[in-house]
Length: 250
Ligand code: BEZ
Ligand code: FE
Image 1 (cartoon, rainbow, N blue to C red):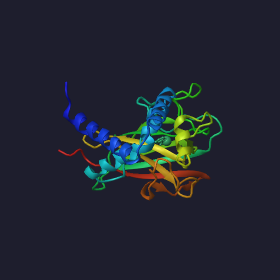
Image 2: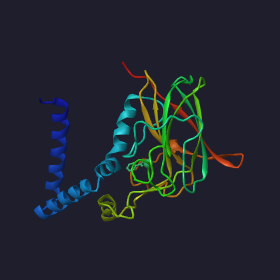
Image 3: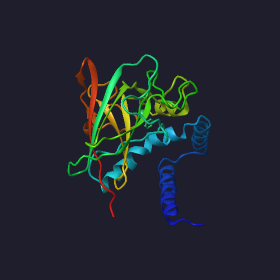
């Protein structure tokens, strides 16, 4: 069955790629080398990584045309549906540094939003996401919490590690970053997804002021309005988030 939306977008993508090939007079050998690199990327299960690295933030920017509130930011390839429900603590393991994650969720008029569902996930001290390596089950370093009557949540987690796209296995996406002369480390970040009936789902991230690699994100998704100063309470770092989500438009 033909699909007009798919036809419109895919035909434009194909035209844009053909224009680039013509502009740079790409040879058959170069075309085949790129083709083989993509095959290799698939065989290494890195297609999601590659696409999200180049395109995810553009989709988030498009989303912001239709909403106010906190900026939409890359989900990346490591979100998992069905994270464990937590109340005050996300399970962590290994040599972690505690981080208290506190948030308040409001609408665009400043009213608190109770019973919003909040997914939190971040990289472990080895820079890995749970559920994606055999030795790190998904109940670690990710959790789902609900906001209280005042729109607030508060969970103990851990300081995220930087995430390196150019892994020690040196996958094809890392190789591509190298060929492009870039660097493949994403600065530390905490992923969040906010869901509440009647509101647009918000997927976003929090970055840390002064952190390494803040100004050289390979994904081009670090923004000042998502970069937070950590507080310190009882000798522990605290991340305080104020999140604004917008209603579903008619
Ligand atoms: C991340 O935020 O973890 C991510 C986003 C895009 C590509 C790779 C990783
Ligand atoms: Fe991430």
